[in-house]
Figure 1 (tube, rainbow, N blue to C red):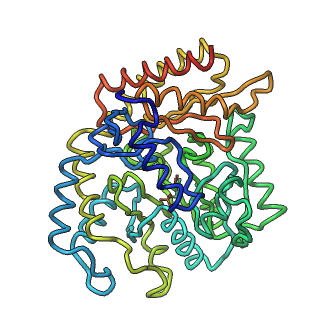
Figure 2 (cartoon, rainbow, N blue to C red):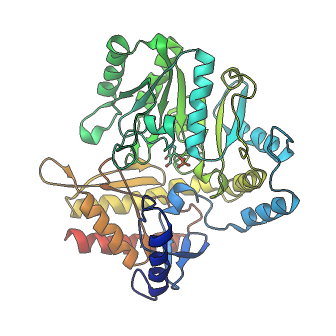
Figure 3 (cartoon, rainbow, N blue to C red):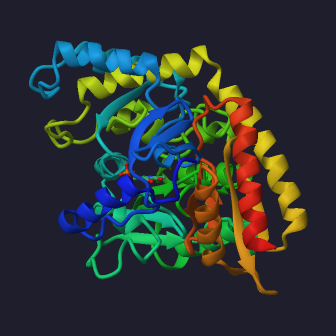
Length: 431
Ligand code: PLP
């Protein structure tokens, strides 16, 4: 570290931000980025951090991977935009072929590309509604699916995402998520869902159930395999479309290319974004062809959707994931980080839970005999870690979890350095 946090140049730029940038775009840490490389980020004051925030899960292949940068530059020099439905381009189709070959669909499947995760979610609901000719959508407690109208309606956390911003989209119903640490077993959660369908919203009016296989913003809570398989069976029996939201869990993070593969469940539709294109805006809905073909021609689209530069980046990202073995790497990094987290939990009773899949791991910070959420502890730890050169990100309905979203290209030495800094921050705050 070269300066205190924020350093003088960051402070000066952030003062200017106050004057011209809308306040809701509140900053998480007062650090202004200058350059990212692999798993590290250097700020405008010359401080270099190990980046466990990873652009909120967009950087599984790391900052500015040379192969991604090269692909972006080459495509940018060819053409930036046509609107795919006006003048199509090959990179869209080639990448769809590659992605679908890797996605967990046994029969014919198709893809449609968008920009943000929220757009993929909005459109997944359109596909499901057009196919089923039903309107209801069931989402879960602690879910996060985005910030536009339909996806915000599906998002559970009220403040800050929804407070004062209603009315929300109708026909959204909320079921408990299996969250063992908070006393909701998979069996409890499933029984509640069945009760809901019997007494509140009949299955024949439900178009889709949307679930994150590991809840992301909600605090890295994995749904058990048995729960996901029961959900699959329920959807088969009732004709409800099962949408698996892999926006945060995707592209190797959990030790499989897609988290749903751990449960060996085939979704009907899947949403992907974030690490798909290493930070360029690209998202997709992938799904069974008959569902993807259901909306009328022109009912799905948008001027910028499936941008060729973002798709070129996405192709390079897939090459990197495959050539550098990043899916296996996630598993190995995860084992190392989990081991350290479990050791910390032995020392600090405030670490209530250690959980996750692969390298998608989090700590839940609590206090008191009822294990009440302790968001202030999480904030203090993230601040102490930043002082020591580690960027950490919070999560959870009560913002009391700290999650790992480090680039998977991180070296073993960087993992150790980051964990040492995290440990010091924990000891400082929790002692
Ligand atoms: N779905 C999940 C599971 C997410 O984690 C997010 C973002 O964090 C979204 C959807 C929305 O994605 P975006 O922020 O790109 O709109």
